[in-house]
Image 1 (cartoon, one colour):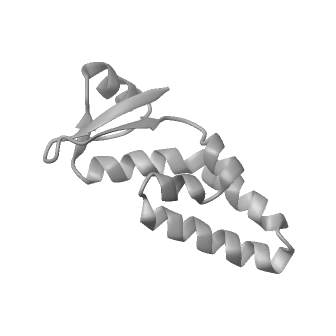
Image 2: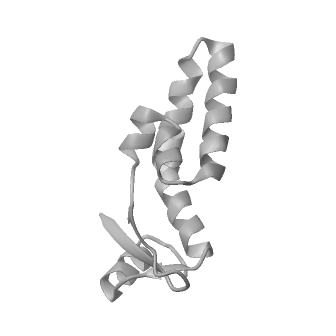
Length: 102
């Protein structure tokens, strides 16, 4: 499920997925980097490096699994807090159904 969010100030539109982030699970911090989400890019990268260096990469899989479940929600919450709003009533209803407040 995808929602479209529009920034009321700049008119910029972003499409965000709701649910598990397969791209974060398989590619770690790169999806955050490609989305321009530098805060979560740095956090995920540091956690992967820190956990992977002590366990020869095994704990890195756990970090990517955890962020696979939570990253898309964090990304949508950040967009909503930076002035983005649902583009349509269907997007708003979907966000409300998934527990997002805006």
